[in-house]
Length: 474
Ligand code: ARG
Image (cartoon, rainbow, N blue to C red; front, top):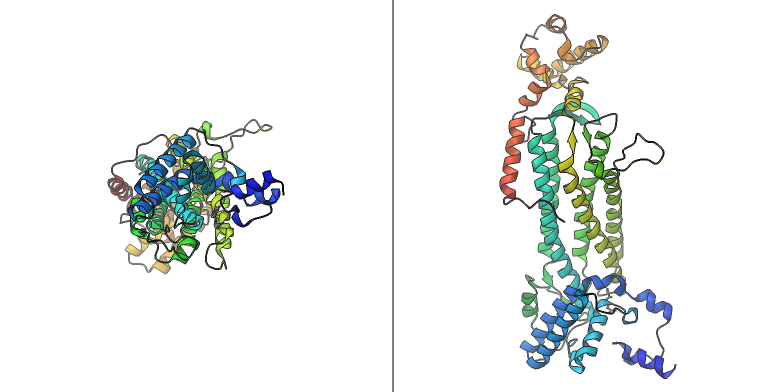
């Protein structure tokens, strides 16, 4: 090895025991700085807390700690201004920053890594990064919740067909349908909050795996970093990635919900349904078929759900059968997590920006709700109220539908005479329930589709969401 090469190797923070340089390919293959530099700010935050703790416990002097903290703050500014030079040779974000600190402030910087390892450092960084992200996700989710509530309020009485098996089942209101989306999102937000609670523990002090021989104060670093407590077991602290899996799982479920909403928007905006029209600014045309307006954004969100699902598989498979404690495999946790974050933010934003500009075709929704015998169950319930057993009523209504089909009529287009020939219990007031308005209004209980119930669900949700998230912006 040339002297030059040897001095580069020795200058690596772990170079002491090596005589041969790292293979060029291996250097690139093992480096993570290309993606983990995204952790730079939390890495510095963690290092500052560690340095202050080292001084509070007299492991280093307060002058040394002050110098280190000043140096780290300068590096933070450099990174923020895009003036920091990242080097693949220095492998990852941690060693890039530590090497820069040594270059900037001299040998004192070499004391920063006392009682610490990159293993507890990276676990801490990822937790801090995800915690801040989860707080941001709550803000964005609230914006989408608010958008959904506003749209639902506008349409609390807008009648549309409700489906089972994608066949017209019973009339509902569009507001009710949107509030079903809202419930999904509410659970998503809960899952993110739950994930934040559980990840909020500090691995710092676990060092490589077994803890450290220095008299460190783990409570102090935990407290400085806003963690609720230190992780209890040093082996678990450096190897646990449950929090990353939980986060990606919660995001995957959110995206599964969004893929369902997307699917509905795609169907509803087709020429066959014509229930809604998506804003032009959220669609594209076809280069060959001039009539087309393609629902690209919902389609893409439907596709992005697959991507996050894939990240969840990546992370769970990454952890499957990993022995304790830290293994380099774990470096593979970051890209799926980062991509999940970016995708999730984009999808929430897409929905929050698209929905307020959705055009809703009330007449078409009403027309389709009135077709397909959607009030057949109401007629059966009517007969039950007239003293007929439900199973018998079901049969009578089946015959009524069959008769109406043969006459090419809807139920409310049959005459009283025709209805009574099918069963004498049908009186003139039967027309009140054969119409779709009567049908939805009759489902008047908690969680039902009656407009007044829908409105009260919206109002209660709005009160809980108070103060409303500010709309606009990302
Ligand atoms: N870049 C590494 C990762 O992301 C940091 C920890 C490295 N630790 C080690 N012992 N090689 O996991």
